Length: 236
Image (cartoon, rainbow, N blue to C red; front, side):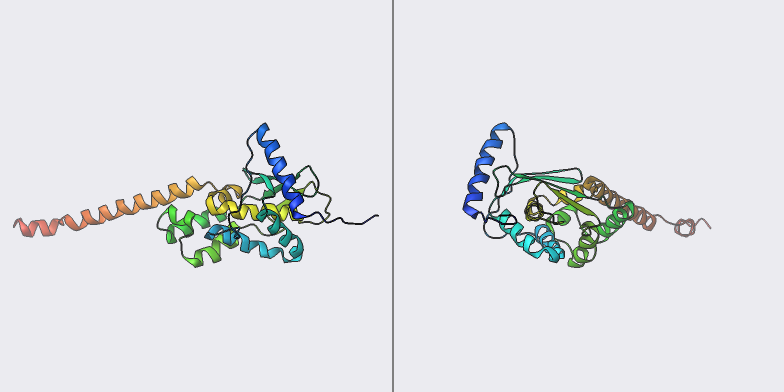
């Protein structure tokens, strides 16, 4: 019957996912996303990203199903290369669906603003990656500038027949990124075209400049002026 949708039990999809993981692992390295426990993200970066996905409220049904997919281990392979994510997601059919998510690179102005904000608010780069930084920095800048604007700075494609802009396989991949950011937050910087080493070097350079300036000021305090020297040695 045309238009009839047959529901596939989760257990059946799990069996297909495990079979494909075993099959593909023999051909080469794969990177499945494995969720431990009931929570997809436990740390700041992962939680912030999963919170960002609420912006796709118009696709609420697919967002929920995508969350279920990632929790059940349906991401067979997940790779982030340059500004794109390539993923294989197990669905109801035997062959996994291919998902590609592309991120626009941030502008040079945004990168400079990010550098300035970090230099003023972050004590060291470890604070940035651990999420241990002032909340206002995360909410006002990182989430508004680093996270892509829906339908403007991020695009999706999936090999499934779903006509929607965001299908459950794309949603699953997006949640998979949230799980990955828990362990590797630098991935998001790479996807947005930001070189983390440049931020680190900027911070180190600022620290060096501050130390040099302090040394200069200390030297000025320790050096006698000509008038003071003349009085001291009774030269005038």
